[in-house]
Length: 94
Image 1 (cartoon, rainbow, N blue to C red):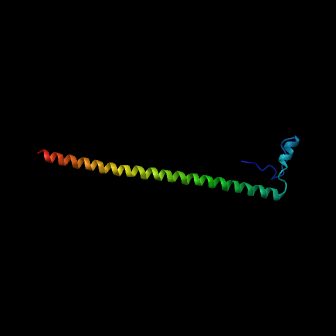
Image 2 (tube, rainbow, N blue to C red; image 1 turned 90 degrees about the vertical axis):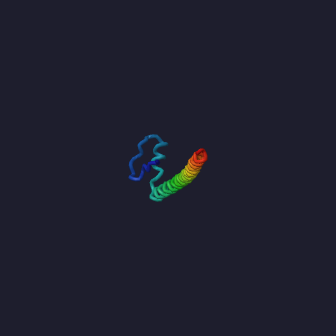
Image 3 (cartoon, one colour; image 1 turned 135 degrees about the horizontal axis):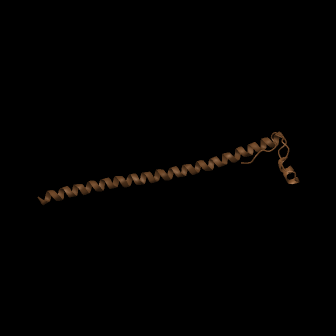
């Protein structure tokens, strides 16, 4: 996460030109507000991506659950059929 260095007008930490320039980027309230709005927008976009990823995972999990559930029902039917076949086969034997 980016740091807002000059909100409290602290002196730049670095002594070199590059550092001073970087630390004095946000002096005016307008620049600070712009920075905050940009952060909010970036966070919104990140959240939207996360939400869509979560929704996709939920859909996938729901699909897998329904698939397994259907297989279980099919299996139950098959077992029932086998038990019935066995029962009738035994009846015919005697």
